[in-house]
Image (cartoon, rainbow, N blue to C red; front, side, top):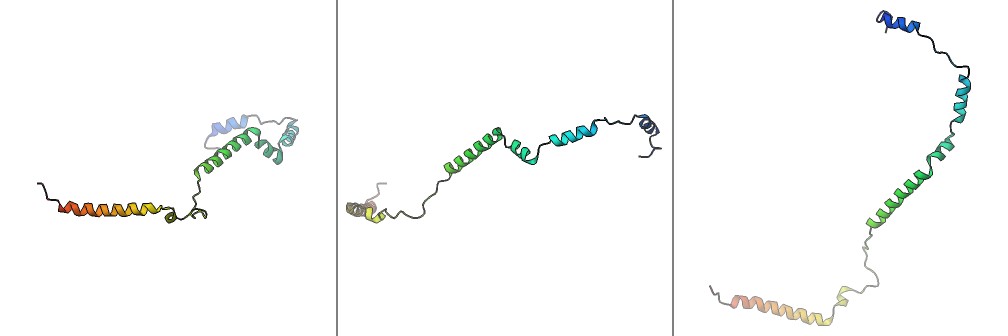
Length: 117
């Protein structure tokens, strides 16, 4: 912006008082710098009891959910379990044989019947 663009503004700015610094300005700045926390103190303040408690609660909930939802399945059969065929009772073979004969007889007798229509 040039002076010719807005002459009134530049006139007002020319009459404004310049800011003056307090004689204690340098001392106040140095005091503020000394009062600033060191990086260690800032880190220690960040890990307050309230934040640590909240973070611990979140971690406990996440671990609990992971344990509750993760159920490992065994892909290998147990060594102490007997074979399924060995568990079958010998009387079951007789029942299965009788059922096979019954089904075969039922299928044959169905075709031998005369339609009643």
